[in-house]
Amino acid sequence: MKVIRMTVWVLLVASLLGFAGGYTILAGNKGAPEMTLNGGKSGPVPFPHLVHQTKFEDCNTCHELFPQEPGAIDALKASGELKKKQVMNKQCTKCHKKMKKDGQKTGPTTCKTCHAKNG
Ligand code: HEC
Ligand code: HEC
Ligand code: HEC
Image 1 (cartoon, rainbow, N blue to C red):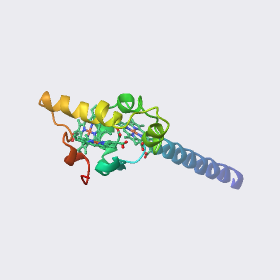
Image 2 (spheres, helix red, strand yellow):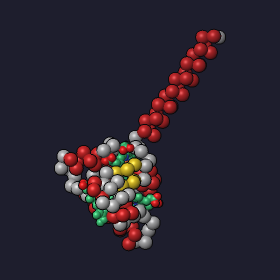
Image 3 (cartoon, helix red, strand yellow):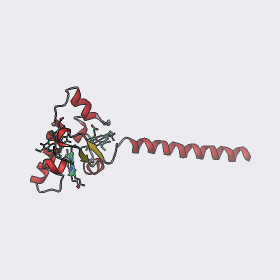
């Protein structure tokens, strides 16, 4: 009897740990919900990541240009694989302007509303 109870206990704990582990991995690979991007001399750019993930199910809407890693844009700009302002012009501003033109709710389209302080 004791052995059976012990076995049930061990299995229960193992399954709970397994579930928690899986959940951590699933939740962890979405990245930060809010982040601040390096906007060079025009100043930092606050970026609500989670808002965009909720709106666009396809991660590659953005991540086709850069991997899902912190600092990815800066690293690719440093190595020359991304041009300065490429993400800004080809993704952020391009999408916001198009949606605005189509009359849809979207994000900022002017320098000062994206860059926290203007230099
Ligand atoms: C609207 C654009 C956009 C979309 C859509 C998007 N991301 Fe990101 N993601 C970014 C940006 C910008 C960064 C920051 C990259 C950097 O630091 O240079 C980033 C960074 C990340 C990181 C790195 C960790 C971190 O906190 O910086 C992970 C992981 C990530 N994204 C996962 C995802 C997943 C999973 C999805 C889809 C569910 C997704 N992203 C959708 C723009 C986006
Ligand atoms: C929708 C948001 C958004 C708008 C609008 C915007 N920017 Fe940016 N900007 C960014 C992001 C994100 C980056 C960093 C990624 C990149 O370089 O593509 C950036 C980067 C920059 C950089 C640094 C480039 C480097 O690597 O040194 C400068 C300078 C800059 N922007 C100037 C401007 C000016 C000037 C305007 C207005 C004409 C403007 N931005 C409008 C989001 C924006
Ligand atoms: C594919 C289209 C798309 C791309 C790419 C995109 N955005 Fe947006 N953005 C949106 C939409 C749509 C909203 C409005 C979401 C909502 O409030 O429902 C938004 C909202 C925002 C907001 C305002 C959020 C708020 O709470 O009002 C900011 C700031 C922003 N985006 C910054 C950025 C930056 C910086 C980038 C580039 C790294 C970027 N976006 C890339 C579509 C896009």
